[in-house]
Amino acid sequence: MTTSSISPQGAQPVSHPPQAGARAADADHSHIAPGEIAVGVVIGRASEYFDFFVYGIASVLVFPAVFFPFEQRLEGVLWAFVIFSFAFIARPFGTVISMAIQRRFGRETKLTIALFVLGTSTAGIAFLPGYASIGFSAIVLLSVFRFAQGLALGGSWDGLPSLLALNAPPNKRGWYAMLGQLGAPLGFFVASALFAYLYSSLPLADFLDWGWRYTFYVAFAINVVALFARLRLVATDEYARLLEERELQPTGVVELARSQGTNLLIGAFAALASYALFHLITVFPLSWISLYSDQSITEFLIVQMVGAVFGAIGIVASGLIADRIGRRFTLGGLAAMIAVFSGFAPTLLDGGRIGQDIFIVLGFAILGLSYGQAAGAVTSNFEPKYRYTGAALTADLAWLIGAAFAPLVALGLSAHFGLAFVSIYLLSGALGTLAALGLNRALARED
Image (cartoon, rainbow, N blue to C red; front, top):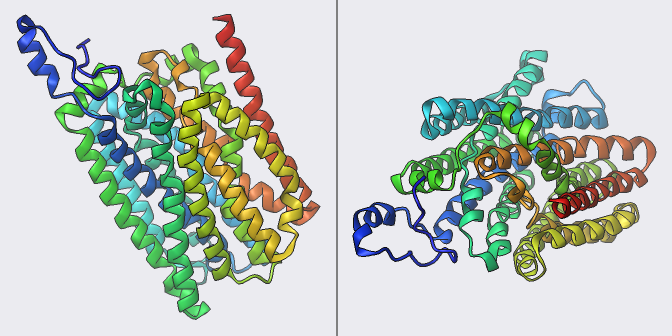
């Protein structure tokens, strides 16, 4: 394995003796600052989050009327949330398939296929006729396109977050870890702004007929451009060599599960509180407001945009906090805070406009602090050769367990049994995170 020319601080090239000049010259071109890697991470994550927030908001405002007009409003939203979960179910399968493709044909081929599948499925949703035009086939096609989006997102893993974590200065790992997470509030802010503009500017009939489709046109354009940018980035000799030097190459999933199964589960559950809160602050409240509140949809979207700003501030603050007390202590402390917040959720959501707005802003602030360190907090547990595939599957499982069914479960339970069950659901996520971090600490002590 070639020796990296990155210094421990990730900022200065290591000097080489004269007799090693040829080798040094060959290695110098793989010197890449963490900031350069961070740009690729932020671009990739922002485009992904924008895409699935567009779909999530449409699941509340559009799909019940366009694809489930034969159902009551509540049932239509619940069915839309069922299809919403398909991408998260598909994502681990996309990762497994894409790792096999990469081992055989290379990273560029894998990302190109992911770009094609993602673009096709997103454009397919944009042009998809509704139930009134083609009947049940519209629901089937929507489900297929949503599943394909999940496969593509699994295939879009480029290893840049892991590379950033390995190249970050030791005293700034929390700071660099949070950079990619900034894509979440950024993507949500833009998606909400776009929907708020279209929803307020068009008559409802026009919005449901053709207005909503513009959001998917934009999602298509952003994802294609972002994935092309990442493809050009990781296809360079500098990045390819650095990824190889850091042993960030795909491994067999069966081998990974046998050797690192415990780390996979700990990694997935360690982020459970953040991922559970994620959709209970973004997608679920919009569905609750649209069904059971007289607050304007446009005004509520604007409140959520304000919340996204607080979320971004929280993510930045999490980097500073984590570098002082440690990423895992930060994640554990915020899980406890989420547990406390869960107790106030029913009162705030049922507290009229003021209570609902406080729920959104406060929830986003807590989410930012927690989510800023949720990605890859325990992926250092993986042996080096398993980290590339392990980090991807850990994220996939965290999304599947914590977020895939959160809007569906929260809305279904609250509509039929009361908002108290939202607290129970969120509390279970916080307890899952604390249990995983406790198990991780116990295993580390034994080692």
